[in-house]
Structure formats: structure tokens, C-alpha cells
Length: 313
Figure 1 (spheres, rainbow, N blue to C red):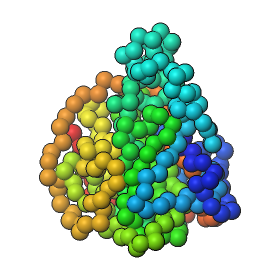
Figure 2 (figure 1 turned 60 degrees about the vertical axis):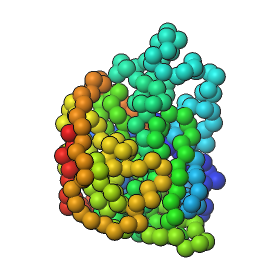
Figure 3 (figure 1 turned 90 degrees about the vertical axis):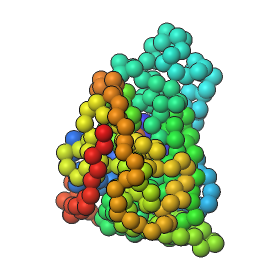
Figure 4 (figure 1 turned 30 degrees about the vertical axis):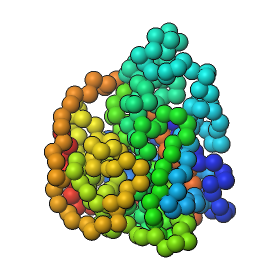
């Protein structure tokens, strides 16, 4: 299930390079850093449609998580709310009777990696104040908004903080499902423009490794990979998601403008056991473009080291 921004969210005739066999909305799991970071090893440039994603600071934006571009409907598969059992939950006998529960005990149409809305893990938008995707690192990329209990409905709402205007930046969408299938993550870059006639502020960098109790500008989550993880995770532990578990606040991340102090988190994480280990294939996040000319395979990418990492238990 990719993220498709509607065509009118984009401005300009930028081009997009796509290797048809390597798509940006494939799940990221057990990959080397150069392959998973911004999905560069899967799709060197930014996903369709072409153009620049315009984002108004100090506003709420709606972003569709859907099975196709310019989709309609209440859910990602185009179904309206009244076309699914209500409540849409695996505990509803009608949902079970209609065969809408997956082998990993989540809802399977669309595949949401969730049993109901309250178990949807949350998604993120991050920003790097650089012009080129090749200049983005984990340390200059800052999570600026979280939409809790997403993806579930097709539209997810994000509160945008008082960001400084930027004519050409890189925004990144992310999702770490909380079980209900093979544990993986999603990350995709978008060329973006921030609009703010009243000035605004630039997030402080370097961003901090996320974790329980961490306050200040935080990195995106990198986990479940062969190399480059900033969060270590072991099967059976609580999943690091875009939520308060990893220090993210609800909605706009207003702590991103404060001073950066590279300290240990103030609180320790709690442990829990995941029972949702059956592998399922899912897809997520995508949209927008870039004008970069790197060749297939992204061989020109230089690996940026992860300065710190956290063990999450």
C-alpha cells in the first residue's frame, strides 16, 4: 500500500528515473544501509508523480495512503466506510465471516498491518534542509510531524510546525508497522517546498537517535536491516514505532527547534512480546520527484555512518 499524493500537491515539470523492477514502496528488511536509506537501492529517484510537494507551515495537511495514485474512497483500496463492516476490526464477527483477517491476524483488505484503527502504528514526515537527495544523512534529517493510528483510513492528517520557508528541500515519509506480518519498515524521499510568509524556524541538527524519553530533534527510525540501524531490535521485543515509544510527540514535533543535547534518554523502554510473526508482503510510502542523474543501482551514493544507535528492549 503506497502513499500517493494527489497531483495538485505538486508543482513543476521535474523528471523521475524509475527501475521498474525496484519500486520505492517495497518493504525494507535485511538490507545494507545504501539499499534501505531513502530506498536508494530500490529506486534511485523519487516516486511518481513528478513535481514538487508544496507544504504550508503552521497548517494541517492530508496525505492519502492508497493502492493507486489519485485514488478515492474511505480506505486505501477505494472502498467507502459503509462498504466494510463497522467497526472495521478483527474482533468483529462480520469481518471474520467475510474473510478479511490475514494469517498474521491483521486486516487484509487493504493490508494495514493492524487489527483495527487503535493498533495502526503511526507514520511520519521528516525534512532535510538540503537541495539534493544525495546530501541527506540521518543526522540532517529531522522528523517534523507524526500522524498517530495511521495508516488506516486513506487520508492521514499531519500537523506541520513553524518551519522556515524552503524553496527546494527533501521531505521523507516513513512507516514502521507494529507487527501483523514480517517486521519491516518503509521510507521514501520527496522533493518538497515549505511555504511560510512569516519566517519560521529551521530544525536544529544533528538530529538525535530516537528513543524513550529523548527530547529534541529526532532522526527517522532505522531498524531490522543488515547494516546502518540506529535502533537495534530483537524478535520478541516491543517494536520501535513512530510514537511516544521512541520519544516522538503527537502531531507537530515542536521540540525540533530546541538545543540539541546528545544525551541518553530520560526513561527506559518497557518490554513486551510480539505474537504477530507470520510473514506478509506489504507496501507503503511514495510520491514526488527529483532531477538527479545518478545511474541505476545508486552506485554514486557514499555511506554516511550512524554516529549513535540505541538498543530498544
